[in-house]
Image (tube, rainbow, N blue to C red; front, side, top):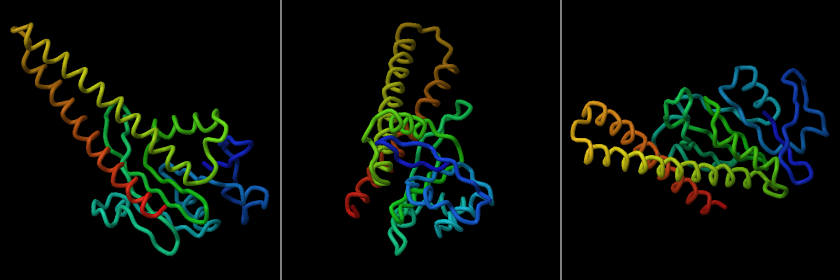
Length: 208
């Protein structure tokens, strides 16, 4: 999906994968290209029009910090975690960010609620987005809000479990342990996500 900024708002713009060249009136304003599980045709389109070779899944999931955040002659490249709750199974999804030529390219496997929230805000709020860096910062602000909400939900659930154990001695301990395991898993993923956000934002400040 390609986005431009018109009248201070982020707007989706239509592009054709089959056009040899982007029309001049479209090519310049494109600020953000967001790719979800792109096809080979979409990968070729990005490389043909913008000279960017999108990372493969193996590269995106490289856990070495030096490989997740780096700068080269093309621009800045970030591989960062975002929470996904597809089919109610919460897990960390790696999102690739490439900032080059004044444009942002994002690549991820699944639809993400954080991205949907940010796009909604940027469509409604005039002046929220002026350049590609604003989009990155806006996405991380939405990410941190989501993580804060998730941690609050975890603590509320743990408080409820504790109350059940203390006031209902005949509780099914198997069910209690299962609920605890779910919250512990979610807590670990959320905290890893927060550490990732801190590392990424520190990197952006250094190279800002």
